[in-house]
Length: 130
Image (cartoon, rainbow, N blue to C red; front, side, top):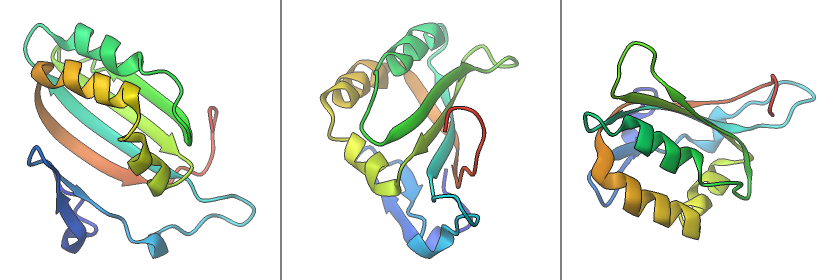
């Protein structure tokens, strides 16, 4: 799904998924806080494979520039997961796509994914884990 705030900046990925690129000017940190890049996404697993997909995603381990990577089960949909991420920058997130553990997770997890339902870019400003 496309982030409706900046539809003109959409870039299709190799698998056909469309993600928006948030303009750098959209990040306005609160005084005294640095700017952090966040993503929240809903992934629907092939029926009966959600727990395995959650294990794969949650098992990637630390990634450079990643401050928080949370995989959660949707309490009202037995096939859905929510992934909440906080990164030092959009570039750090993009660079993570070149990590061996991310390549391995994509290769193992892709057959278990029925679809990407929602995706939101955020600017985390505080809380635990940042």
